[in-house]
Image 1 (cartoon, helix red, strand yellow):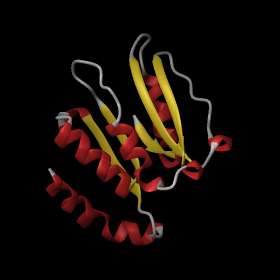
Image 2 (image 1 turned 60 degrees about the horizontal axis):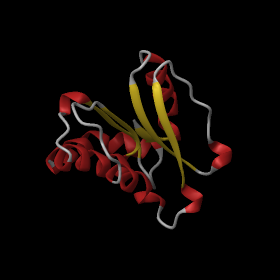
Image 3 (image 1 turned 180 degrees about the vertical axis):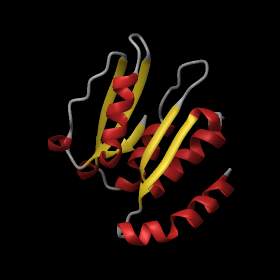
Image 4 (image 1 turned 120 degrees about the horizontal axis):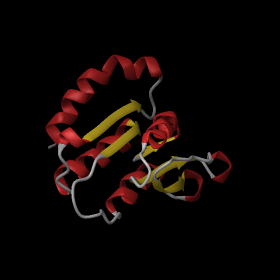
Amino acid sequence: MAGDESALPAIGASLDALTPGARAVVLVVVDGPDHELVLTTPGDANITYLHRRSTENPVTLLPDAVAGMDFAPGPVDVFVHGEAGEVRAVRKHLLSERGIDRKKASISPYWRRTMTDEEWRTIKSAWLADQANDI
């Protein structure tokens, strides 16, 4: 699972739904340590918070972290939600470079940097259609 603070409710619900022994790796981008939440799960989760304020380029923080991960052998389900540009970069990496099955991927851009919510809603459908061409 990967995302930013906008995805925390969905990440929390997904962690709650894990069965005992199910493994999850979670990467969450927040402003800093004071924005971290305690997340619990009946599964086995490795939760890492990435801090925007401690990096020169926060836009690449999540995509770089996902690209640097070692994946367990076997099939992988992915969950990536958050800022549109970051989600798109992670999506492209997972589907193109890692070969993740689209049917095993929940990937959703919730918001777009430099846009109001209303502006994002206006272009989101066209943006998603364009994103489909990335792969």
